[in-house]
Amino acid sequence: MPTCFNKVLILGTLTRDPMVKTPPGKLPTADFGMSLTRHYRINGGEDREETTFLECVAFGRQAEVLAQYCRKGRFLMVEGRLRSEPAEGKQTDKRSPLCVVVESFQFVGPHSEPATQP
Image (cartoon, rainbow, N blue to C red; front, top):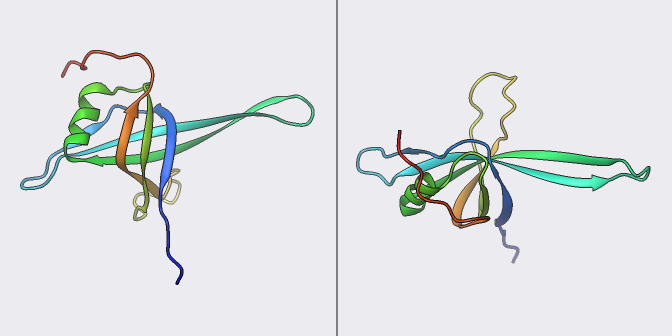
């Protein structure tokens, strides 16, 4: 009997600060974007790069920790699953229809102090 498997592991850079929302009676939710850049060389020896942008969402305590310690430009490793997002906005919207639901994450790079709240 066939089964489906939905798991992603990404290492990339945050494209914006995580934004936390806490609807009444629900878990906190953090939305943030990540960019994943692949560097490669073509046959002629020319260096190229290809960048993919993904939306990510984390829930509960993970959302709070991400908002506390992560800012735009920070490297982050995320393990999660893909979820399709309903199409919103104009036809020219370039956002990906896929979102990564964060199941776990790991900070990459030097440790930093908690970000100050504005």
